[in-house]
Image (tube, rainbow, N blue to C red):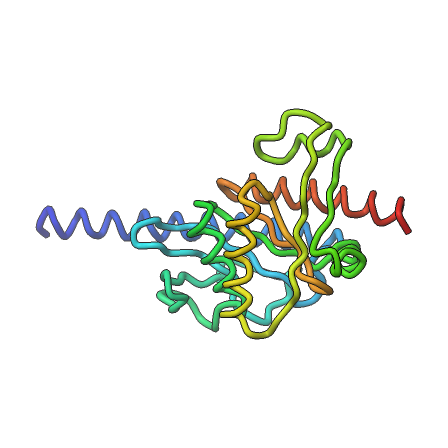
Length: 218
């Protein structure tokens, strides 16, 4: 066996290990979110960057129970959303994940469908968003150092036209580059992070704050 063949095999093994590790982490997170009522049934989707150049993601296959995901529930896709490895089709919202990763350099993108995110997205939908300020939990968001931080949470109109929706997300991120997440109206929360752990933390922070706001401002 030549040295080049050995090197290629080693790279393939390493890539497979990276995919398995990321998919396993995302599956574990999805199970935890399911238990907390943030991703019931088949709702939501999760992705993480496998490679930057060329861009490749590990992402949930569509239509799966988020409380029962395994490594085999994830697909490897390229920058156009084409499936490179795995069985099934990627989430219908794959283009949103790709837009967020490209624009922000995110390492992972997580999407939940909680009761409180749905309620607040409707309550503040006409205003296209709302501010959260004064809560200590805001310091869990990347780069936020004080509870006095004022976080704008954009609310976008939901659509089944994902090309149009992706363009709306990109326009919103250009207008609000410091945002840590956004809501789709009557739908759910999208947030991201430099890696899977950071994105998970952002979900937990936002979901806590959404519940506080919802219970306080009924």
